[in-house]
Image (cartoon, rainbow, N blue to C red; front, top):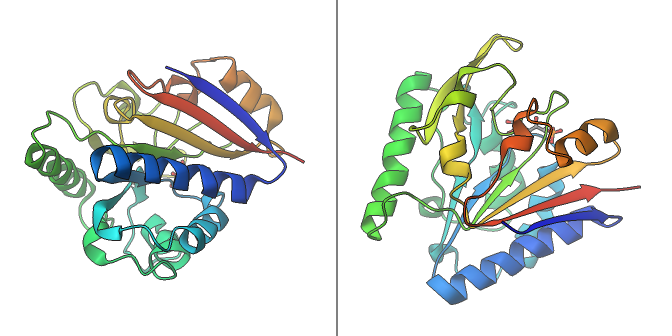
Length: 231
Ligand code: 6PG
């Protein structure tokens, strides 16, 4: 695993350009670009710029998935799908068939299982044992969570499932989330984070402090990049 830590004064364009570079490489090498989007607030401006600079990508060869989702309808202000739709899919004219949405509006267990099945079908169609993302974008919460892998929650221990429903006591809510087995199969994982928000937490995570879920992301046969908004 190659690891890069990029401390950027031009976070948004630099992150969008990295995504575009990885997209072009995947399309050139394999004729497809499989990208999982992170939720939260940090990625929103990156998606907006990406939609603008990537307008010539062959969207029919790009597959957008989600690293996690809140258990809300797709038009809810809390929905990660809604954020991506507003910042990327609509402005980028991304067709619906290029997006696999986690159905936050249904029972979490059902939504997680159907998502895992959907990824499994896409993998099988290409003769693969497991759906392997070209790029998974992730964020980091103030408690060191990533996707919806929160400290002291059951999903952290998942070793077989690829997508699970995870109850988060601190939020008193269910989430749908990728697990480490799926995340660590990615060809490239990229954290998008604001280094000014919690510099000491980020340093602990970068130093491998395993108490923080984000520190346990370690692609088995892939690269790991941290792009940190600095200044
Ligand atoms: C979510 C995200 C979550 C997010 C972090 C950071 O659904 O909220 O997947 O893991 O990336 O909480 O969020 P911010 O970018 O808003 O700080």
